[in-house]
Image (cartoon, rainbow, N blue to C red):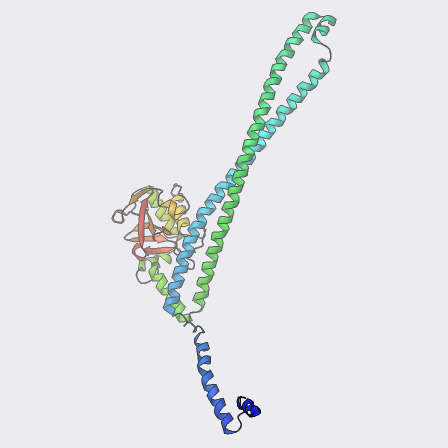
Length: 366
């Protein structure tokens, strides 16, 4: 009986499914696993759709604008780098001159010491007593006293010169550190410009030939090369050797600046360039006014403070016109609501209407 009760509590032995039962179980197992597989697939990020041609064009425009912002920062850093280089060179020259004067003083002091050693072995009273010509000796002694005064003065001068050289070398070390920082900043902006321009070229390469042509037409129109500015097209293709009509500028210097800008039409945009064969935007305005005998700073954000601010309604030929909130673009106003400017890479110097970009201000140089 006990054995019967013990066996009654045992679990029945499981037998594997076979035949139709096995197939039914497999079907149910697969059906239960299907939702898990589907859930796993749902976790994967869907592929992003390719950007439209309009989106590519908008991004290319942003990249060109960002590259121009970086270009103006590069121009500013280059100006600082040039100033730091000049300061280091000037201090090196000053240190060399001071060292030459110090060596001369040391040589003079050495000669005086040698002479004293040769004549000063005996006590002066003994020399006087032994001298056959006391008057001559006393005269020589007076000269020695004066020489001693000169020696003391020379020693004092040498100490001052050593201190001065130490100060010059300390300043040179500071300027050398500043120069290294300027060069690092210059390289940073150079890399930023090249990266943005390369990205723009890569994006343009994703467009079809027709789309690229449409983009160039729209960009030309925006910068003065399209239907909105027929004067720009005629000026771009004008014969540069042909005599020009007098420019209606407020003074002769402004007229010369405008004339120079006309002569630059058609030359390529190259970032960092100031002519004579290529320009960036602030390089063109700087070169134009330099031709008129006026020195302008290098960047857009310094040129805007290089003269008297004028309102848009007061613009006259020769005025500098600035664009975008960061003052990242500049052109030379020529009258009639138009300017001459260097637009961007791939777009040469040309005439353009000033209302094609967000106006930020204007400055009258002279």
